[in-house]
Length: 376
Image 1 (cartoon, rainbow, N blue to C red):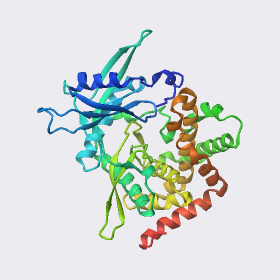
Image 2: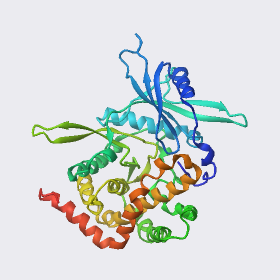
Image 3: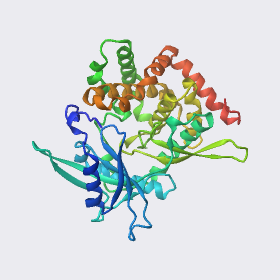
Image 4: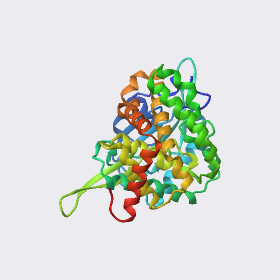
């Protein structure tokens, strides 16, 4: 992901392994024979869906994995990737549907692979995770009950991580990490990609309001470890039928722990609200259902609630501005990078046009309705 000082290097940072190279990595590093492999969509790392040939030694092992090849910038922070991997293992042990981490032949959870590109030698951190079943929320009709469950999941995740300990935990203090909501002002250096437009003006206004009204309240927010990217493509669902024939959706996978960092409880719920709005036909009502689910586990303080509107707007700005910038670096990946932009700008403009008071009224009234058992 983009950091504070490494924007220019990102054009060269994303790995470009072919399927043959990736298969060779799985076999040489993890000792598994590949029967089938194909690339998966990704932002600035490289992922492959890997199917393994069964042998008498691997009959009890999973048959499907995800090979994750970190970009050259992320590969310079092995402590951070180690902590993220241990968090996945910790959460899985606590009952969350996260991937298992496959050990290398040497018993490690990562391997640093160096590739001679001709002009220089590049190093990439490689991991192998179990493949999780299910469809992303982006492909499923989003109901109020599902939104409530996503809010609840976000809170339970943060709550569980209060008990996580690791000697390298300080690596999650990522000062210049542009995806952390603390660092919204870093977007200023990317605004040129929007050109003179209403979109650019709205982002400028959000940044100013963030500095004046949110940053001044950081000391009043409760700190925690954030997943930081509970978006509509990082939560997988599996469907089943109820006794009445209705479709029941259950979370079957939580993906992508690469954006984890220290933040605040209110960040996690703001991020979840923003991404769930993307898939909703009634986006302004999403926040109340997600908030109700979150607060069933971790009630927000009045100060945290008061910052929620601007935090959701700020996350829209992060996603939309960084996607526009990344598209200039990787135009071949535009379809994946711009998935949020299809409705994101429209939702951000609508929030801004309605104003904080009107949006909060919808959110808080909807959340309150859950207390009486009548969801809106």
